[in-house]
Length: 148
Figure 1 (cartoon, rainbow, N blue to C red):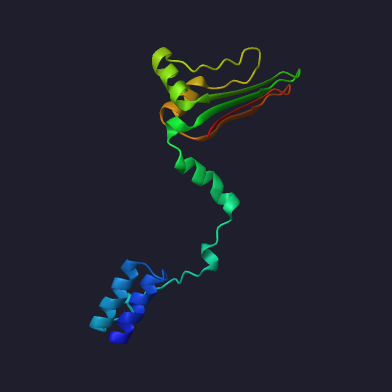
Figure 2 (tube, one colour):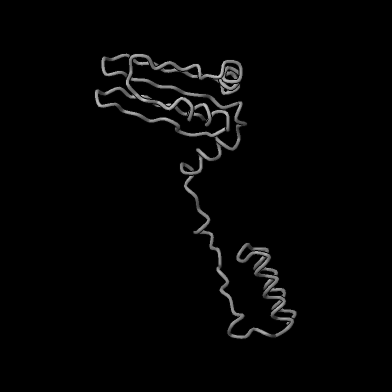
């Protein structure tokens, strides 16, 4: 039995099973009472299943490394008549402006985008990151609002 307990501990150490399953196995070994109803599957984790594409991981790492106030608000507008606007504002500034004025310092005058400014303000004040607005109007105007 000592050998089996050591094997279970080695499986935990190698990450093949979690501690809870290991404890159940050791308890079962001590009690020698694995009935057919008490059997459970032990899923072995292989090195291949842990491989993560670095390109897939990169956005998550970047988002987790920055505090929300270190992030930037990006507003990109391409109008159908050729006008282009790219605005980058620090989130700390945007939040202070919202707190002081109650509105977002973004104007989309002349572009029919129907951006829900209250939703956008709520997302900013609740520290939500990512693509918040991605609109392309019927006449070709494009608006993109991202926090990253």
